[in-house]
Image (cartoon, rainbow, N blue to C red; front, side, top):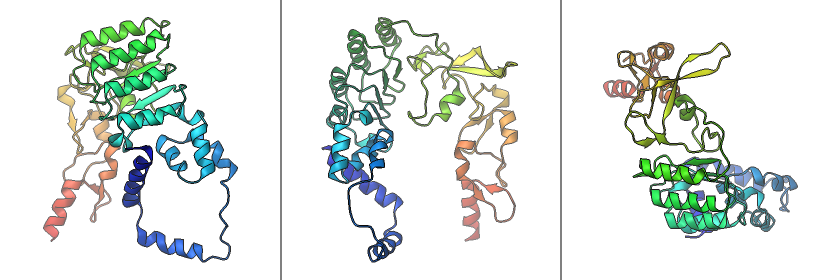
Length: 333
């Protein structure tokens, strides 16, 4: 499937999900009949300046608008130096499409972020890497079609070309073992020494929903968990704050998400005796649970990430959770 079909299917999905024809068509017809309607012409010059700030899907759509924009998108390398593919485009991205998209960088690709792109294989990504030796950020978390051996081959290829890989995100790659991580780290050490790794705090990691607003805090995002000895993202806990306001990591509660319970709000580790459950199946510490609003019926709280699931209560100034709201509607009928 080519890029044009890729864009066409995505446009159809967006139209069905966000647009209601009965609302758009009357306004469109009215605009066509207006005496002050503007005649078609070349795109405004400002559009060419914003190309470098558009994401991949927006660039592909712009290339379908008119010939001047198509030529600008295809010939300008700058918009294609940082390629980020995430939801919902990730489900349709294949090796063939990835090669077509990255070719537009003409070998000057600097950032390649493929978030949960499960159709990408070792061979497809290796083809891209061999043509783009300047990549400094490679983010491939959740790409289940990749293997540890394929990632080692990719990192080795970049290291052989004296590439300084600043950020490598491989969380979610299946069958990633301690020996794989050690081999990857040995290839990265062929490059200039990196600065001392900064701690990864669960609160910061959780609030970074996309690769676009997420700053890499380490060269490699995964580590060996000191609790279970598995290769996962290992979080440092910040239970205290210094006088300067900086969070101080506690080494005794350093571990992965599965080994140490952490509060969905503040991110600190939570002891078993103070665990408070949320309506969204998360965990809260007692302090954060007391501060959050509760359901008027079951007295449970949503974390801030899922606060949009609250339903206003008809009898009080508070809210109802989805489950209690469904019960109320059922009894009302």
